[in-house]
Image 1 (cartoon, rainbow, N blue to C red):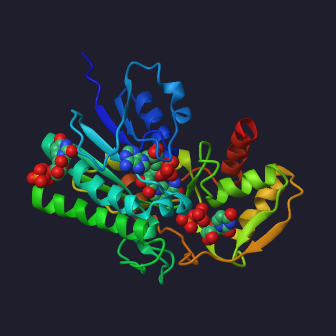
Image 2 (image 1 turned 180 degrees about the horizontal axis):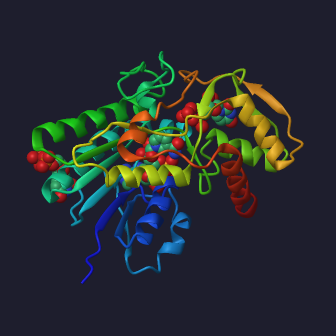
Image 3 (image 1 turned 90 degrees about the vertical axis):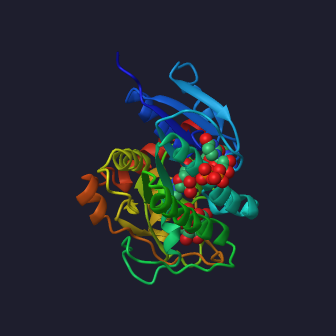
Length: 313
Ligand code: NAD
Ligand code: UDP
Ligand code: UDP
């Protein structure tokens, strides 16, 4: 008899989590999605609810969780600045209390556990592109700190459970990812610009738009995360997963206007506090250890994302 791997996805009703649940079901896993719907929505997973191998549990992972699984993907955490700054203390709690609970669960079960970390651990980086060996440049008392320091502390906890309790951990550092099912009101740049453009509203560029980001399409990201979970036994990471093609925010605004045929104008707003100037992953390690690199470039990814927002909003 074929025994399905039982996989827990925390934050499974979110943007990345919902695609991950979908992929794991395609790979014949038995998927448990845990989410408290803080930023996620049932709409993201409604098409999975009829699948007998998909189970949804409403739960806040800052509280203990007892269930039986073989693998844990730990994605639960608000990800956009608007959302994680809405209740910054909760953001730190998700990353610290949440990590302790999920690591405690993994320890009891001897389950493999993957942490969805972030390029934010590099802060406003002084080296470019960023490699995993760079320790980062993070303000510990700013408005982004609840997220940045929260994720850094989560990495610390992962590596201490690894050293102290011999846990089988995996840490991926996710760089800006975009695609269908991004939350329409979370203010992230790709979804914001697309919604503004589709409604012919002003496109709000913060600062002069010269700050850069490197945008990874969601399918590539999910592929990288699954490869990391199934990667070599001794490879804990951290490993950067992202698309190294770097664009200025102004270039992105222009591309979105072109893609949507919008009559929107670009307007300039002040740059938010501690907004990193540049971000680009060095992905040599992911290429070497996981044989992974992104396949979908911005033009194609934007096309699919625009289609989604056209249909749904
Ligand atoms: P998202 O906000 O769409 O998803 C997060 C999910 O976690 C939501 O469904 C939310 O309801 C759930 N959640 C939040 N707090 C919870 C709690 N206490 N208990 C249970 N569930 C909780 O964000 P996303 O873009 O899908 O990000 C997923 C993960 O990837 C996050 O950990 C994020 O930090 C990380 N990440 C994402 C990006 C990106 O560009 N999308 C970049 C770097 C890191
Ligand atoms: N925990 C959990 N589910 C489990 C096992 C543990 O939620 O199946 C939580 C538990 O609440 C504990 C935390 O994980 O507070 C850390 O567990 P660990 O065993 O590392 O620490 P201890 O219980 O010894 O404090
Ligand atoms: N940004 C912008 N206009 C917007 C939303 C964001 O110019 O309407 C900028 C923001 O200042 C940042 C970049 O786009 O420099 C990426 O922002 P996002 O919130 O998507 O991600 P993060 O800052 O966490 O990388």
